[in-house]
Amino acid sequence: MKGPLVQIVGAGPGSPDLLTLRALRAIEQAEVLVWTDSLVNPAIAALASPSCERIRTSTLTLEEVLEVVVQRAQAGQRVVRLHDGDPCLYGALAEQVCRLADAQLEVEVVPGLSAYQATAAALGCELTIPGLVQTIVLSRAGGRTGVPERESLQHLAALGASLCLYLSARHVEDVEAELLLHYDPETPVAIGYRVSWPDQWLTIVPLHQMASTSREQQLIRTTLYVVSPALRPPAAARSKLYSASHKHLFRGGVGTSQ
Picture (tube, rainbow, N blue to C red):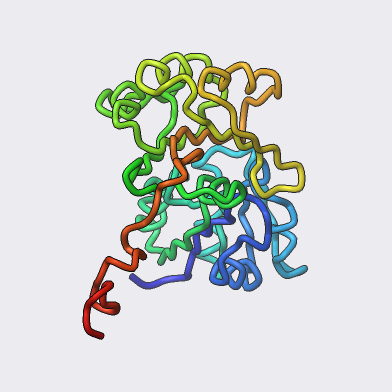
């Protein structure tokens, strides 16, 4: 495909120093920055050149955003569409790529660190603990847009995995009630608001306090829930991969020849 390059760039969870190097280079080289100002830290948009045209999208529909992107790119300008988090996750990426392809524009997607990763890192927690939980599920409450029935919370919660819920704070009472059917009430839940921003708020509560804590903090947006027994693993939990008795291609186990 030929034509001007449009980069759809993940800004990460909020802090500028959590940008990838590729994302930083794209922002610095942008001639037009079309950015989600309602969700992306202004300090990240400020990394663009002073000569860069900055277009805020909080009041625009997706169609209006794409009209701007196509117009500027077809005029030969280097356009960066800047998303919060990772554009591959709840970023309306498919619609944007299809529309830009129809306009014969080349697209590069630059991934970003997601909020669930930043949350786990901030807590110093691993979400996959040997013998306890080995699966991470990224999902959301149904809300106005709904989710496929096979992906309902009822089905996902039955796995007992590390469950990371985006876009769910407005429906937290319903979420808690559903989760309590499948998880122990004392299962730890990390509640993260604007993780990695200067005003970050992050705590761990038992599942049965998930809704009440959210309402006390008046959380309705930019909130992530991580429901997982891995947040309080047993002291005996240990990776077998790094055990002295475990041998693999690069290391012999105890009692084996080197």
